Length: 425
Image (cartoon, rainbow, N blue to C red; front, top):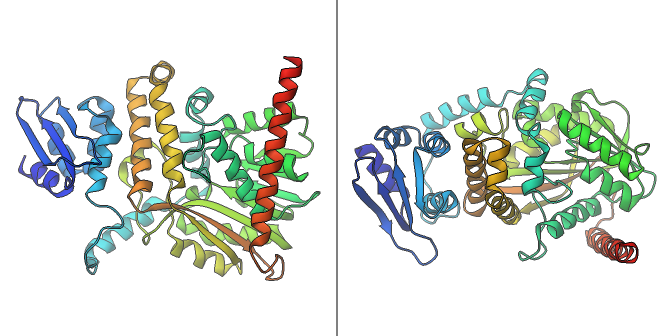
């Protein structure tokens, strides 16, 4: 138990954590803080704290999933916030040189984990995205945007923030009627259908999820645009043709560093001479690292969050010009808070779809992700690429103007739909 006690003293620096052990013994770590809820945790057996001390993230995650770690005061998000708070990304103090041996071991493990051959990609995607449609309906917005929203005001609803995200991205694509757009990792089709609707463009969306493909095709048929918005079960490496615009939202995390140069070379070859590409991805604010063992095992096998220092060299090798880079620092934390709250609110329905262990797994995943954007080293990057430096206006004003126009257009369309429903409802 000495190892567990040492771990708790090291990580609980602000806020108060009470541990009730299986034999009834209680321990308290830290001290009350004005901005953190006190949390009480009970272990149902004596082995659980030992396992957590040896493998903190995977040990804690599995213990919570299995019901061996029970949060009695607060919830799992409060607990993870308490732990994360002790080691924020912005922590003060002088930086020390990294341990070269530890860095080398992590680099080797990371390289093994990041391999994402074509034959593995579809299996990895299916592990996460081919879950029940009903699950995603319970915590996502109605358009099923399973990526970081864009909050012009932190108080905005999830639906508003996701609509604003689509406008934010469309503005950076500098669209005009008749263009051909490729959507790499199209999800359930929401972005492709939006671009077609607001800009009168033709879109090919590709995915490796059969469940997503079926939904996207159905949505295009229902909207009467299946001839202009098409979806295929296709790896990005197998796409052919030429496109005026390429957009990729939340897919790059599944590419893997060994394939970054291949990805950008393929995008350049598919992009017209005066084309524009927008890459939206989760990113690390620090340097390259590894995917934690729990997330790799249960949530995103084959997934990897890139540092900006990994993305840019790969795109440079393909002579893709990074014409605009934006770091969305807190937007995903706001997004994940909505997803977490909706997940908790629908606990009974999620347990009915799967079971209690699955619910706790999903809750732990969202809580861990949320805190990594609140105080950890994660953010979102939106990188705009062009092949020709003269393709776009030389100032960013066009983005702001286009985004404002798209929001006005969507607001007008929404009001018209409401009026129509009132008229005939």
